[in-house]
Image (cartoon, rainbow, N blue to C red; front, side, top):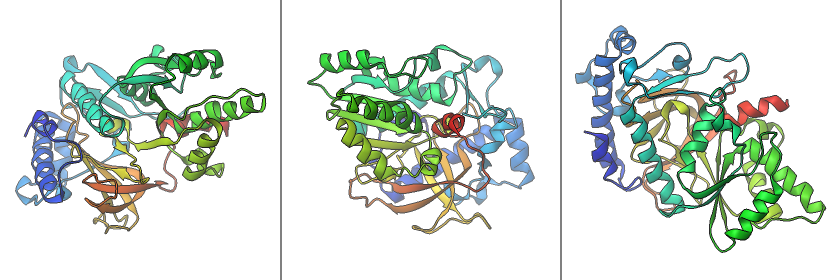
Length: 363
């Protein structure tokens, strides 16, 4: 089954039985592909006695620890076919993941992301304010998961400005001019959670005391990158939403969960505050003692599977995050598939989200 065939379906259209068949077929084929093309991956499968004939469904497929991409060069294409190397976020001294993309995998990442995000924002592109600084995508030494996130979401903007300068100062004049120009249109805002709080919300709050206010009631905010730092500051998701609504009228706010090791397969938060799996990917929670699948409502280690990666063996990964699957096919928002919550990083796991990595500088 090719990814083009999967893209013919709407991202939240398949119920459990049909989605299970689709994922099992595609992920089994990807396991076979990477076993043939990636020597390191092949040796790992041999070491655990992997036999494709023993696979009942995609729950039975082997998974790699996401940390492995920090330690090994894992790719299933020759170096000449690598068009882009993505790196994960990391604090100073941390190793970073390196993800090798060929043209086809890179293209499919973008196509999947467009389908997923459009289900929440609509198919039309909107004027867009990026709540970050332009230097993050101009300076290739800084380019990593954070830069990839900005570039990925930028395709949804018809016109784009950066809200911050390279000193992370709010461009008050630029934002005012932009809002005046597009005052009767929906505005898309995108950024990483801690940076939005530190450099956008706090500055808007200060400006409000000086009589300077902005109206973003017609805005849609998409943010991600981790909650660790804000949680340590006692800022909950509800508080985050309430404060932004009070300071500038923002009331359409969507979090998302994703990682550079599976770019494109992001998990968007719905109107009911639940993260959703699309047909291009899935989440399994596993018990830490034996890695058996958890029941719905039971906390476990998050495993993510993706139908996209063809240039590297990243289609089935065990993360260092904990979460709870709340249900499947019956979220009040109407979208099919599993819906879940991320609880946070496992104890002693490294800080790795774009937002949390940046926030470590403020500790």
